[in-house]
Length: 137
Image (cartoon, rainbow, N blue to C red; front, side, top):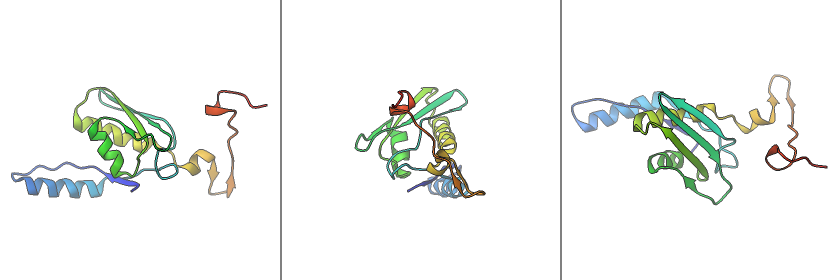
């Protein structure tokens, strides 16, 4: 619910490897900003090696449109309406690292609104029309 971590572990036995991976994941936690508790705040593109991930928000009730592995990660983050497209290599480890790089690029709602904590000033961006493309008269 808003915080994710990833890790890998190697050992002779599976149980030991899983325990090492969990410990590694606890050391690599990422906050995931959510918009209205169900989607991401903005469209994000990230690359890792030859893998490119594009994440885009969806309206409420649309569900997760992604491959099953990335859909599971998004559900663990508490994101239930999102679209994720993967281009290039589909190597599972690189895909997860790329997804976390995209989560790291996400800005919170306060950052998008232009909240300046030092000054205590909120700058509200002027969006013209739907998706910022059409003018409002």
